[in-house]
Length: 275
Ligand SMILES: [Zn+2]
Image (cartoon, rainbow, N blue to C red; front, side, top):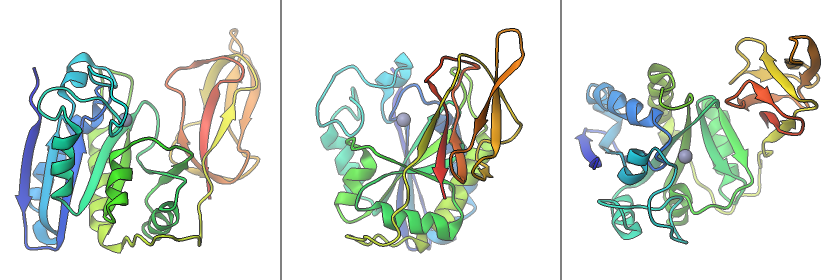
């Protein structure tokens, strides 16, 4: 059985941060990125007081390469645990020891982004992402996530999605680590204001495929901003003939694409975070 690794760096700065990888066992990119980030952060101690890494939080799920653990629980902090961090209690105790908690996930074809829910904390996180230029996505979701638990305690909690690829390969380790390093550097700019009804972000928009076929994308649209009406891709028929354009329904950033080339009519062909 895999064992979770818990290591801390200490520095002269102010921030007390916990980074978590491996909450979902089929998301492997953070399991590579966090050790890389640990080594880079050893030389960049100026901003943190303590920088803790919990790598492999859900060993059973990781070993099984499944999203969730062995046991189903209701109030589950976004997963079911087994072994060392099998109890919510043990994980919550570790979380409670830190002031800032960043839960790092990956998704097959999203760009590197900060993911937050459309709730009372959204305006604060939105303003911070706008200020720092960090890519973000806002969704309608009410899961029992680590981020939600931390925010409910009046502390800073973030979910990060890193660009992954289909298992068992990994997303780009360097860009993932670079995104997290920038995010860590910009944490001092975050201000969680509750309640905050000013400047609410829009939630992301899914574009549904108008036809069955093979997706043919223009290069480099993932993570890029495009304007309303712009064609960001094409769906070809099975003879390779272009059949339908995929058009931006609003101006915003392409944050997620399907991890398959083949798509059925009505399936999500791209997700857009509007400006
Ligand atoms: Zn996940």
